[in-house]
Image (cartoon, rainbow, N blue to C red; front, side):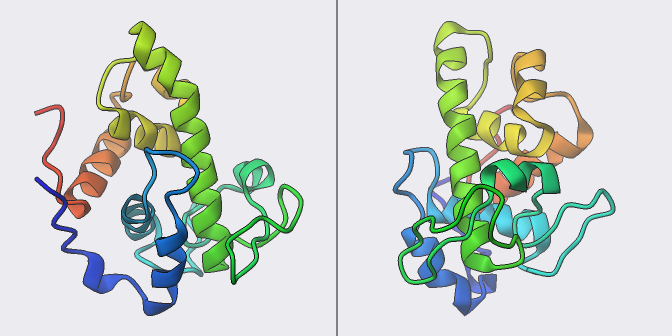
Length: 167
């Protein structure tokens, strides 16, 4: 598929300018990837809270937000607060934190992919790292065989109009 993005009509208007800024930090993460992740994580509900305690648009756990979250300038998207500042229920803070966290996962996975320590599609591996944790991907040598993680990656690929990579 070439990315039909049939979910794009669901993206709330207040997110469009934010998602247009995503994609500057690493080649693996685009506004479409973050939008698809937001749909999967919260159905575009900034007030969503999971049974496990994950919060906001991109469903950060508090301990992950403490390392990856930060307040961003609503006009520029640049980080203006210290790590752990900001609010996962704020769309700018959440989108930019997801971009930073996804890029940190992708950067840590690049040498593992190159060495063959983990195998699979780089997008799938990055998304699996977001869902299950980067350590779970490394331990499994690829996308972990967790029903939730396999479904998570598959759903985001569908939102992006991509066919499954492991079929």
